Image (cartoon, rainbow over the protein chains, first blue to last red):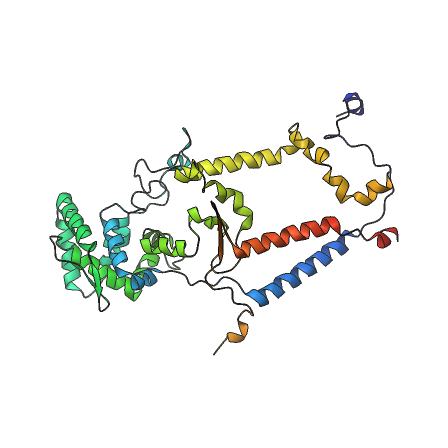
Length: 321
Length: 56
Protein backbone atom coordinates (compact mmCIF):
# COMPACT_ATOMS: atom_id res chain seq x y z
CA UNK A 1 0.00 0.00 0.00
CA UNK A 2 1.49 3.37 -0.97
CA UNK A 3 1.96 6.33 1.40
CA UNK A 4 -0.54 8.34 -0.64
CA UNK A 5 -3.23 5.73 -0.07
CA UNK A 6 -2.60 5.74 3.69
CA UNK A 7 -2.89 9.50 3.85
CA UNK A 8 -6.16 9.43 1.98
CA UNK A 9 -7.78 7.00 4.45
CA UNK A 10 -9.67 8.52 7.34
CA UNK A 11 -7.93 7.90 10.71
CA UNK A 12 -9.61 5.09 12.63
CA UNK A 13 -8.51 4.68 16.30
CA UNK A 14 -9.35 0.95 16.23
CA UNK A 15 -7.23 0.30 13.17
CA UNK A 16 -4.56 3.00 12.87
CA UNK A 17 -1.86 4.19 15.26
CA UNK A 18 -0.12 7.54 15.37
CA UNK A 19 3.69 7.39 15.12
CA UNK A 20 5.32 7.08 18.56
CA UNK A 21 6.62 10.48 19.69
CA UNK A 22 8.06 9.47 23.07
CA UNK A 23 11.49 8.18 24.00
CA UNK A 24 12.96 4.71 23.66
CA UNK A 25 15.34 2.55 25.66
CA UNK A 26 17.23 -0.71 25.12
CA UNK A 27 15.53 -3.90 26.24
CA UNK A 28 17.29 -7.18 27.00
CA UNK A 29 14.96 -9.83 25.59
CA UNK A 30 17.44 -12.67 26.17
CA UNK A 31 17.62 -11.74 29.86
CA UNK A 32 13.84 -11.81 30.18
CA UNK A 33 13.53 -15.16 28.35
CA UNK A 34 16.24 -16.67 30.58
CA UNK A 35 14.61 -15.44 33.79
CA UNK A 36 11.17 -16.69 32.64
CA UNK A 37 12.65 -20.09 31.74
CA UNK A 38 14.35 -20.44 35.13
CA UNK A 39 11.26 -19.35 37.08
CA UNK A 40 9.02 -21.78 35.18
CA UNK A 41 11.56 -24.61 35.62
CA UNK A 42 11.76 -24.02 39.38
CA UNK A 43 7.95 -23.90 39.57
CA UNK A 44 7.49 -27.12 37.56
CA UNK A 45 10.10 -29.10 39.50
CA UNK A 46 8.93 -27.70 42.84
CA UNK A 47 5.25 -28.44 42.18
CA UNK A 48 6.14 -31.93 40.89
CA UNK A 49 7.95 -32.66 44.17
CA UNK A 50 5.08 -31.24 46.17
CA UNK A 51 2.07 -32.74 44.36
CA UNK A 52 3.33 -35.47 42.01
CA UNK A 53 1.09 -36.30 39.06
CA UNK A 54 -2.15 -38.25 38.46
CA UNK A 55 -1.40 -41.94 38.84
CA UNK A 56 -4.64 -43.82 38.35
CA UNK A 57 -4.03 -47.44 37.36
CA UNK A 58 -4.88 -48.30 33.75
CA UNK A 59 -8.00 -50.40 33.29
CA UNK A 60 -7.38 -53.59 31.33
CA UNK A 61 -9.82 -56.30 30.27
CA UNK A 62 -8.41 -58.35 33.13
CA UNK A 63 -9.16 -55.56 35.64
CA UNK A 64 -12.69 -55.26 34.31
CA UNK A 65 -13.51 -58.99 34.20
CA UNK A 66 -12.04 -59.54 37.66
CA UNK A 67 -13.99 -56.64 39.15
CA UNK A 68 -17.30 -57.45 37.43
CA UNK A 69 -17.41 -60.71 35.47
CA UNK A 70 -21.18 -60.50 35.02
CA UNK A 71 -20.84 -57.18 33.21
CA UNK A 72 -18.05 -58.70 31.15
CA UNK A 73 -20.27 -61.63 30.09
CA UNK A 74 -23.21 -59.31 29.32
CA UNK A 75 -21.00 -57.02 27.23
CA UNK A 76 -19.45 -60.00 25.43
CA UNK A 77 -22.81 -61.36 24.28
CA UNK A 78 -23.69 -57.87 22.98
CA UNK A 79 -20.45 -57.97 20.97
CA UNK A 80 -21.36 -61.40 19.59
CA UNK A 81 -24.94 -60.51 18.65
CA UNK A 82 -23.98 -57.12 17.21
CA UNK A 83 -25.83 -54.82 19.61
CA UNK A 84 -22.86 -53.30 21.49
CA UNK A 85 -21.76 -49.69 21.23
CA UNK A 86 -18.85 -50.60 18.97
CA UNK A 87 -20.95 -52.89 16.75
CA UNK A 88 -23.49 -50.08 16.18
CA UNK A 89 -20.98 -47.20 16.00
CA UNK A 90 -20.75 -46.92 12.22
CA UNK A 91 -17.69 -45.29 10.61
CA UNK A 92 -14.75 -45.46 11.15
CA UNK A 93 -15.23 -48.99 12.58
CA UNK A 94 -18.05 -50.49 10.52
CA UNK A 95 -20.85 -49.72 8.09
CA UNK A 96 -23.70 -49.63 10.62
CA UNK A 97 -26.19 -47.14 9.21
CA UNK A 98 -27.81 -44.24 11.06
CA UNK A 99 -25.44 -43.71 13.97
CA UNK A 100 -22.99 -41.21 12.44
CA UNK A 101 -23.32 -37.64 13.63
CA UNK A 102 -24.25 -34.96 11.14
CA UNK A 103 -24.82 -31.25 10.91
CA UNK A 104 -27.33 -30.74 8.14
CA UNK A 105 -25.77 -32.38 5.08
CA UNK A 106 -22.33 -32.51 6.74
CA UNK A 107 -21.34 -35.90 8.15
CA UNK A 108 -17.56 -36.13 8.39
CA UNK A 109 -17.60 -39.71 9.72
CA UNK A 110 -19.68 -40.95 6.79
CA UNK A 111 -17.57 -39.05 4.28
CA UNK A 112 -14.30 -40.51 5.58
CA UNK A 113 -15.83 -43.99 5.85
CA UNK A 114 -14.54 -47.17 7.46
CA UNK A 115 -10.77 -46.95 7.87
CA UNK A 116 -10.29 -48.79 11.19
CA UNK A 117 -12.37 -51.90 10.51
CA UNK A 118 -13.56 -53.66 13.67
CA UNK A 119 -15.83 -56.70 13.68
CA UNK A 120 -16.65 -57.14 17.39
CA UNK A 121 -18.05 -60.68 17.06
CA UNK A 122 -14.92 -61.90 15.28
CA UNK A 123 -12.29 -59.62 16.87
CA UNK A 124 -13.52 -59.68 20.48
CA UNK A 125 -15.10 -63.13 20.84
CA UNK A 126 -14.62 -65.72 18.09
CA UNK A 127 -11.03 -64.77 17.19
CA UNK A 128 -9.60 -64.91 20.74
CA UNK A 129 -11.53 -68.15 21.47
CA UNK A 130 -10.02 -69.79 18.39
CA UNK A 131 -6.55 -69.29 19.90
CA UNK A 132 -7.37 -71.48 22.92
CA UNK A 133 -5.34 -74.69 22.83
CA UNK A 134 -5.96 -78.02 24.60
CA UNK A 135 -9.61 -77.26 25.33
CA UNK A 136 -11.73 -79.73 23.32
CA UNK A 137 -15.01 -78.43 24.75
CA UNK A 138 -14.23 -74.91 23.51
CA UNK A 139 -13.17 -76.16 20.08
CA UNK A 140 -16.36 -78.22 19.87
CA UNK A 141 -18.51 -75.27 20.94
CA UNK A 142 -16.91 -73.06 18.31
CA UNK A 143 -17.43 -75.73 15.62
CA UNK A 144 -21.09 -76.06 16.57
CA UNK A 145 -21.57 -72.28 16.59
CA UNK A 146 -19.82 -71.76 13.24
CA UNK A 147 -21.74 -74.62 11.60
CA UNK A 148 -25.15 -73.26 12.72
CA UNK A 149 -27.39 -71.11 10.52
CA UNK A 150 -27.49 -67.35 11.23
CA UNK A 151 -31.04 -67.66 12.59
CA UNK A 152 -29.98 -70.44 14.95
CA UNK A 153 -26.98 -68.39 16.10
CA UNK A 154 -29.25 -65.41 16.72
CA UNK A 155 -31.69 -67.54 18.73
CA UNK A 156 -28.85 -68.86 20.94
CA UNK A 157 -27.46 -65.34 21.37
CA UNK A 158 -30.87 -63.92 22.31
CA UNK A 159 -31.51 -66.70 24.83
CA UNK A 160 -28.07 -66.26 26.38
CA UNK A 161 -28.51 -62.47 26.60
CA UNK A 162 -31.74 -63.08 28.55
CA UNK A 163 -30.15 -65.69 30.80
CA UNK A 164 -26.98 -63.69 31.53
CA UNK A 165 -29.07 -60.74 32.66
CA UNK A 166 -29.89 -62.96 35.69
CA UNK A 167 -26.33 -64.25 36.15
CA UNK A 168 -24.53 -64.25 39.47
CA UNK A 169 -21.04 -64.70 40.87
CA UNK A 170 -20.64 -67.71 43.15
CA UNK A 171 -17.25 -68.27 44.77
CA UNK A 172 -15.62 -66.26 42.02
CA UNK A 173 -17.32 -68.24 39.24
CA UNK A 174 -19.80 -66.90 36.70
CA UNK A 175 -23.12 -68.72 37.09
CA UNK A 176 -25.64 -68.26 34.29
CA UNK A 177 -29.17 -69.76 34.59
CA UNK A 178 -29.81 -72.71 32.29
CA UNK A 179 -31.40 -71.97 28.92
CA UNK A 180 -31.55 -72.91 25.26
CA UNK A 181 -28.40 -71.10 24.27
CA UNK A 182 -26.47 -73.99 22.72
CA UNK A 183 -22.67 -73.58 22.74
CA UNK A 184 -22.73 -69.92 23.81
CA UNK A 185 -22.49 -70.75 27.52
CA UNK A 186 -19.20 -72.60 27.02
CA UNK A 187 -17.87 -69.87 24.71
CA UNK A 188 -18.62 -66.91 26.99
CA UNK A 189 -17.55 -68.91 30.05
CA UNK A 190 -14.17 -69.59 28.43
CA UNK A 191 -13.87 -65.97 27.27
CA UNK A 192 -14.54 -64.79 30.84
CA UNK A 193 -11.86 -67.13 32.16
CA UNK A 194 -9.43 -65.82 29.52
CA UNK A 195 -10.27 -62.25 30.47
CA UNK A 196 -9.73 -62.85 34.18
CA UNK A 197 -6.37 -64.53 33.56
CA UNK A 198 -5.11 -61.65 31.36
CA UNK A 199 -4.88 -63.90 28.30
CA UNK A 200 -7.56 -61.90 26.47
CA UNK A 201 -5.59 -58.65 26.82
CA UNK A 202 -2.59 -60.35 25.23
CA UNK A 203 -4.66 -62.06 22.53
CA UNK A 204 -6.22 -58.79 21.39
CA UNK A 205 -3.07 -56.66 21.40
CA UNK A 206 -1.00 -59.35 19.71
CA UNK A 207 -3.23 -59.09 16.65
CA UNK A 208 -1.61 -55.77 15.75
CA UNK A 209 1.89 -57.06 15.00
CA UNK A 210 5.27 -57.84 16.53
CA UNK A 211 5.48 -54.95 18.98
CA UNK A 212 1.76 -54.90 19.83
CA UNK A 213 1.24 -51.24 20.61
CA UNK A 214 -2.23 -50.94 19.09
CA UNK A 215 -4.80 -51.12 21.89
CA UNK A 216 -7.75 -49.87 19.82
CA UNK A 217 -9.76 -53.08 19.99
CA UNK A 218 -9.19 -53.70 23.71
CA UNK A 219 -10.15 -50.11 24.48
CA UNK A 220 -13.32 -50.32 22.39
CA UNK A 221 -14.25 -53.57 24.12
CA UNK A 222 -13.74 -52.02 27.57
CA UNK A 223 -15.57 -48.85 26.53
CA UNK A 224 -18.66 -50.93 25.70
CA UNK A 225 -18.98 -52.03 29.32
CA UNK A 226 -21.11 -50.44 32.00
CA UNK A 227 -18.14 -50.97 34.36
CA UNK A 228 -16.03 -48.47 32.43
CA UNK A 229 -18.83 -45.91 32.27
CA UNK A 230 -19.29 -46.25 36.02
CA UNK A 231 -15.56 -45.68 36.55
CA UNK A 232 -15.74 -42.50 34.45
CA UNK A 233 -18.75 -41.23 36.38
CA UNK A 234 -17.09 -42.00 39.73
CA UNK A 235 -14.12 -39.85 38.68
CA UNK A 236 -16.37 -37.04 37.36
CA UNK A 237 -15.06 -37.57 33.84
CA UNK A 238 -18.38 -38.09 32.04
CA UNK A 239 -19.63 -35.64 29.47
CA UNK A 240 -22.58 -34.49 31.57
CA UNK A 241 -20.28 -33.82 34.56
CA UNK A 242 -18.10 -31.23 32.79
CA UNK A 243 -15.68 -34.16 32.56
CA UNK A 244 -13.64 -32.59 29.77
CA UNK A 245 -12.10 -30.12 32.25
CA UNK A 246 -11.58 -32.63 35.08
CA UNK A 247 -8.65 -34.80 36.10
CA UNK A 248 -8.60 -37.92 38.27
CA UNK A 249 -8.27 -37.46 42.02
CA UNK A 250 -7.83 -33.97 43.42
CA UNK A 251 -5.61 -32.74 40.60
CA UNK A 252 -6.63 -29.65 38.63
CA UNK A 253 -7.73 -30.44 35.10
CA UNK A 254 -8.11 -28.65 31.80
CA UNK A 255 -9.93 -25.57 33.10
CA UNK A 256 -9.44 -23.79 29.75
CA UNK A 257 -11.94 -26.22 28.16
CA UNK A 258 -14.77 -24.77 30.27
CA UNK A 259 -16.61 -23.20 27.34
CA UNK A 260 -16.27 -26.33 25.18
CA UNK A 261 -17.73 -28.59 27.86
CA UNK A 262 -20.29 -25.98 28.98
CA UNK A 263 -22.32 -26.46 25.77
CA UNK A 264 -22.75 -30.17 26.53
CA UNK A 265 -24.57 -29.27 29.76
CA UNK A 266 -27.34 -27.12 28.23
CA UNK A 267 -30.10 -27.72 25.67
CA UNK A 268 -30.25 -28.32 22.81
CA UNK A 269 -26.78 -29.90 22.94
CA UNK A 270 -27.38 -31.88 26.16
CA UNK A 271 -30.19 -33.83 24.50
CA UNK A 272 -28.87 -33.94 20.94
CA UNK A 273 -27.63 -37.10 19.24
CA UNK A 274 -25.34 -34.88 17.17
CA UNK A 275 -23.89 -32.91 20.11
CA UNK A 276 -20.23 -33.54 19.22
CA UNK A 277 -20.39 -32.10 15.71
CA UNK A 278 -22.73 -29.29 16.82
CA UNK A 279 -20.48 -28.19 19.70
CA UNK A 280 -17.36 -28.48 17.50
CA UNK A 281 -18.99 -26.29 14.87
CA UNK A 282 -20.11 -23.72 17.44
CA UNK A 283 -16.65 -23.56 19.03
CA UNK A 284 -15.10 -23.28 15.56
CA UNK A 285 -17.39 -20.32 14.83
CA UNK A 286 -16.58 -18.64 18.17
CA UNK A 287 -12.83 -19.20 17.63
CA UNK A 288 -13.14 -17.63 14.18
CA UNK A 289 -14.89 -14.61 15.73
CA UNK A 290 -12.05 -14.28 18.25
CA UNK A 291 -9.43 -14.45 15.48
CA UNK A 292 -11.27 -11.82 13.46
CA UNK A 293 -11.87 -9.36 16.34
CA UNK A 294 -9.52 -6.73 14.81
CA UNK A 295 -11.68 -6.72 11.67
CA UNK A 296 -15.14 -6.68 13.24
CA UNK A 297 -16.52 -3.12 13.72
CA UNK A 298 -17.95 -2.58 17.18
CA UNK A 299 -16.35 -5.68 18.69
CA UNK A 300 -12.87 -4.30 18.05
CA UNK A 301 -13.83 -1.00 19.74
CA UNK A 302 -14.62 -2.60 23.12
CA UNK A 303 -11.05 -2.15 24.52
CA UNK A 304 -11.17 1.54 23.56
CA UNK A 305 -14.61 2.02 25.11
CA UNK A 306 -13.82 0.16 28.34
CA UNK A 307 -10.49 2.04 28.67
CA UNK A 308 -8.87 -0.80 30.61
CA UNK A 309 -5.62 0.01 28.81
CA UNK A 310 -5.54 3.39 30.51
CA UNK A 311 -5.59 1.63 33.87
CA UNK A 312 -2.81 -0.81 32.92
CA UNK A 313 -0.62 2.03 31.61
CA UNK A 314 -1.83 4.47 34.28
CA UNK A 315 1.67 5.92 34.90
CA UNK A 316 1.99 6.96 31.27
CA UNK A 317 -1.48 8.44 30.99
CA UNK A 318 -1.09 10.26 34.30
CA UNK A 319 2.11 11.86 33.02
CA UNK A 320 0.26 12.89 29.87
CA UNK A 321 -2.36 14.70 31.97
CA UNK B 1 12.94 -52.07 47.06
CA UNK B 2 10.68 -49.37 48.36
CA UNK B 3 10.49 -46.17 46.37
CA UNK B 4 8.39 -44.29 48.90
CA UNK B 5 10.98 -41.51 49.05
CA UNK B 6 9.90 -40.63 45.49
CA UNK B 7 6.27 -40.11 46.54
CA UNK B 8 4.79 -36.62 46.37
CA UNK B 9 4.78 -34.68 49.64
CA UNK B 10 1.06 -33.95 49.23
CA UNK B 11 -1.00 -36.86 47.91
CA UNK B 12 -3.75 -35.66 45.57
CA UNK B 13 -4.66 -39.19 44.38
CA UNK B 14 -7.78 -39.24 46.53
CA UNK B 15 -11.45 -38.92 45.54
CA UNK B 16 -11.95 -35.41 44.15
CA UNK B 17 -13.91 -32.65 45.84
CA UNK B 18 -16.52 -31.10 43.54
CA UNK B 19 -18.69 -28.04 43.87
CA UNK B 20 -22.23 -28.01 42.42
CA UNK B 21 -24.17 -24.88 41.60
CA UNK B 22 -27.14 -25.47 39.33
CA UNK B 23 -25.87 -26.76 36.02
CA UNK B 24 -22.29 -25.93 37.01
CA UNK B 25 -20.03 -28.65 38.40
CA UNK B 26 -16.40 -27.83 39.05
CA UNK B 27 -13.60 -29.44 41.02
CA UNK B 28 -12.14 -27.59 43.98
CA UNK B 29 -8.70 -27.97 42.37
CA UNK B 30 -9.89 -26.16 39.24
CA UNK B 31 -11.46 -23.39 41.36
CA UNK B 32 -8.13 -22.90 43.14
CA UNK B 33 -6.18 -22.77 39.87
CA UNK B 34 -8.67 -20.32 38.31
CA UNK B 35 -8.51 -18.20 41.49
CA UNK B 36 -4.70 -18.13 41.29
CA UNK B 37 -4.85 -17.07 37.64
CA UNK B 38 -7.25 -14.22 38.47
CA UNK B 39 -5.03 -13.20 41.39
CA UNK B 40 -1.93 -13.08 39.16
CA UNK B 41 -3.85 -11.02 36.61
CA UNK B 42 -4.99 -8.54 39.25
CA UNK B 43 -1.48 -8.33 40.73
CA UNK B 44 -0.09 -7.62 37.27
CA UNK B 45 -2.51 -4.71 36.94
CA UNK B 46 -2.22 -3.26 40.43
CA UNK B 47 1.47 -3.71 41.25
CA UNK B 48 3.19 -0.54 40.00
CA UNK B 49 6.00 -0.77 37.45
CA UNK B 50 9.54 -0.50 38.73
CA UNK B 51 10.05 3.19 37.87
CA UNK B 52 13.59 3.40 39.29
CA UNK B 53 15.09 0.75 37.04
CA UNK B 54 13.19 2.15 34.04
CA UNK B 55 14.94 5.50 34.47
CA UNK B 56 18.36 3.99 34.89
